[in-house]
Amino acid sequence: MNILANITRMWLTRSIKPFVFKNEYDNFLEYMDHDKLGLYVHIPFCRSICSFCPYCKELYSEEKCEKYIYALLKEIDIAGGRYKSKKTVTSLYFGGGTPALAVKYLRVVIEKLNEYFEITQGIGIELHPDDVTDETLTMLKNSGITKISIGIQSFSKKYIKLLGRKAPDAEKLQKTLSGYDFETISADLIFALPSQTYVDLKEDVETAFKIGANHIAIYPFIDFTFANSGIKPMKKTEKRRLLDMITVYFNNKGCKRESIWTFSYKPNSGYSSMTRENFLGFGCSATTLLDSQFKINTFNVNEYKKRIEAGKLPTSLTLRFTRRQRMIYYLFWTAYSTKVKSKDFEDFFGTPLKKEFGFELWLMKKCGFITERNGIYEMTLKGAFYYHHYENYYTLAYIDKMWGIMRKCSFPDKMIL
Image (cartoon, rainbow, N blue to C red; front, side, top):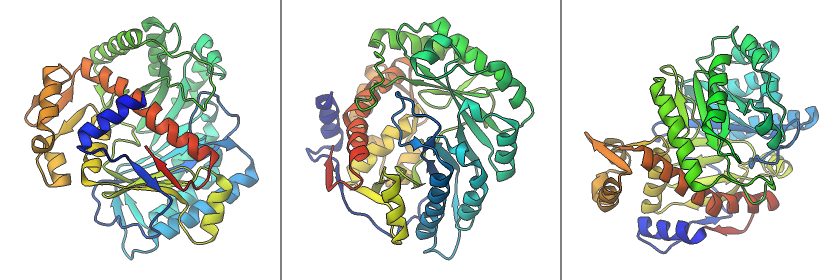
């Protein structure tokens, strides 16, 4: 697994140099000249811990949450307080954990961010099905939230039990959601579970539409080594057949494919905190991507607060990109949307896409992975599956290792990927 990821990295970067993350950071982030900048805020608290979830989280308590929010506000001040003018940004997303557990604090966090940033494309938040109540949704609306993403995982009792969750009440969700006009109501579903069929997945998707979702995310189950889920991943051939069939279903329904895993039923109902050229991350485990660096905050809540109290950013590790590495990172996550535009690449890097990756583009067209029209490269069904297949290698070779290390050590000396 690591061999395939490393060979691909060396080929595309034209270098044997690995990705080297060092225990260093900039306390002043130069983001003012970055276009299409997004914001992300991580709230790491959950009512209970799901074995399949790899994200940074810990059990909720009111006291811990309040102290965490206080530190979060200070982190925003540290990052944004160096500039006299506001920065225009695209969007803001709250993730977790279960960020709605901090619902009464969200308004003050958003107001703090509004001191330094002007958000132009809306604010999104992830919700547990239990958070879909009139009280919580009203508070979210009053805070300025425009997009919600509900972590359904599955409506099937069989699969939800496998994931260690209780089955969502679809009728209750539908009744509650019908009273609110969020721009996006996204339903997160997990696919490629053991023995899952197209009929099973289609039933989940159709139920999601019935409760009021206008955006569906079907994320593949990934067996992270540190998660100890005990769930056996689906075989490659079965997974490809399932992904192709559900994609055709969405196409026939008139949905727009916005990424490998996400489909919008209505215009302007997208939900994605990942497919952005640059972003600033706040909170435990949050990452920041700028033109020349990628940094990740410590996963440890107590160490996060200590660093903030000392007036420093809570960065655990920083990767300083080579130019070629930055190109690969850009293409990998832009391709997540299933499209890469030559003009956008050239605007970002100042060099033509074909000049840098002409052979790779030619090879992918020959293999039937992509098509090209008017300078826009778009994945075929085959290409989308193999992107997923490689992303799975990438996730287990790189992200699994990174998160595994950072869950154990707050500030590692170095990490080589």
